[in-house]
Image (cartoon, rainbow, N blue to C red; front, side, top):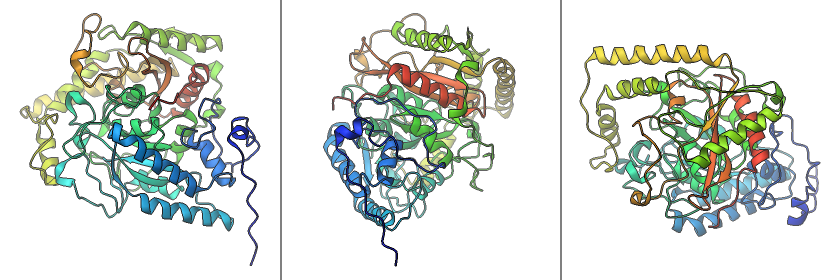
Amino acid sequence: MTTPPAPPSRLSRRQLLGGAVAGIAAPAATRAAVPAAAAPGDDDPLFMSATRLAALIRARQLSASEVVRLHIARLEAVNPRLNALGATCFERALQEAAAADAALARGARCGPLHGVPMTIKDSFDTEGVISTAGTLGRRDFVPKRDATVVARARAAGAILLGKSNTPEFTLGGGWKGTDNLVYGLTRNPYDTDYQPGASSGGAAALVAAGGASFDIGSDFGGSLRGPANACGLAALKPTHGRVPRSGHIIGYGGPYDSFQGIGPIARRVEDLALLLPIIAGPDRQDAVIEPVPLGDPAAVELSRLRVAWFASNGLNAPTAENQALVRQAAAWFRELGCRVVEDMPPKMAALSAARFAYAGAPGSDPMRRLLAASGTTQASPGLYLGGEEAPVAELTRAAEALDAIRSEQLAWIERYDLILCPAGTRAALPIDLERLPPPPGPRVAGISYLGVFNNNGWPAGVVRTGTSSLDPGLPLGIQVVGQPWRDELVLAAMAHIERRAGGYRRPPL
């Protein structure tokens, strides 16, 4: 029998912060594609990037068991104030961590996420762990198999700690954001009087607070990117057709298929680059997923990018500080030598109106069927159950309008590689919306800076770029959008913004 190599001596936190592990080489398949700049918290396993944490576990500078125990303790400490955590599987997580450590001791590896703790949005099925989707009828539902993206993350070595809170079916939080009748209201770790965004609000709150290294969420109209903006994180909605929706409460197929996206949310952009190849690709269930190769963000020549930017869509004006962040980001790319032009896709309002007409055509029938399938007899107050079914002719006209505008926008984006634009009109919303001052200028209902890029399926991410002075201490992000199937351009640009702006900062919680 071969004697396993002795583990290297442990590094102090001072050594970690000083970069003593910079020479630790990961296998090519697991090497970080987009290295992040050092930031406060990079020496703390609770707040360092998942990429760095995985490297330390592989190098046996940290054990998976101690990392999992640290995260469990952190969840138990912060969740009473955040209410972001649903069902947990702590005992199983500790067993998996011990198995991960034993595997490393005998020279084996479980994958690029070996021993890294994660939470998963409660809208995904998780084998052996209660998965409610925020609806009362599933309060005790325990799936027999993992959703595809969960299974892939676990196969890569990640360890599930529990489920992050979400509104009912990801759509029923109403004006309170991430709220449901099963677990209640989730709060923002930067200020608990504020919302964490929705519908991946529990995911964002836990990752920002150091309760998990990353989470995987869904994005139907900004449900990953909005919480990333509210909680100072990095999130990516990949190109439509890149990541399977199998095992998500609103999955693939049906009239809303083209709006739903699945993606990662983490503290650093390098983690998005690590996670995307793990969760992407066909699963022989979701029929629209294509085997399109992923580009390498590290190979992107930033100076050659053609960049469009807009600080306001002219319909719903962001705050002045939000607009200033977009202009600053545009200047950073101009400094690189990029061609930078103020421009925006055509017919943004018309596209949103077409989606509103199309999505509203079935009335509330899709939600009523979900309630029935879940055995739920009492819906969350925020779940919209009104509206009447429209005639087939109206649905057809709306579908044709959607496709016509998508085609026109595809022709437009051939001029550019990237778009820089707001991630919203402001920082996180207060839980008590009566505290919210009136927004500047006219407002057009239904026109979102996020949802418009669900309508056309382009890859879009949000990265923290600053801190609000209007809502002191709350983070602010900007949005980066790319040509379809050029997710690597989005990640590379987000990493550049992160390097210039600093990215994630630990909340005071």
